[in-house]
Image 1 (cartoon, rainbow, N blue to C red):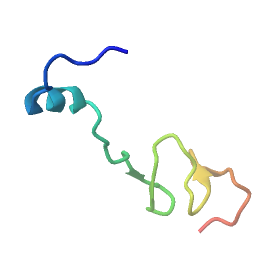
Image 2: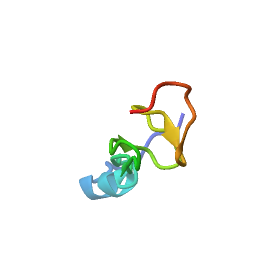
Image 3: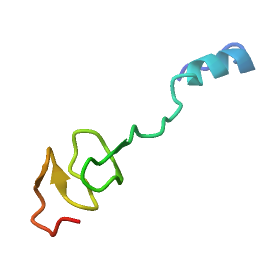
Length: 60
């Protein structure tokens, strides 16, 4: 098994990890109820998508 010949510096380690950060999801307000939801997804609170109810539940 291969082993590293030199210690990896903090700078090199940080550059390798630079793309591993997490981002908060992009939330948009629902046009029906105003709750935050993911874009291109049905609203979890009122169940509407593109102006109509798609979950079969009651609209708010």
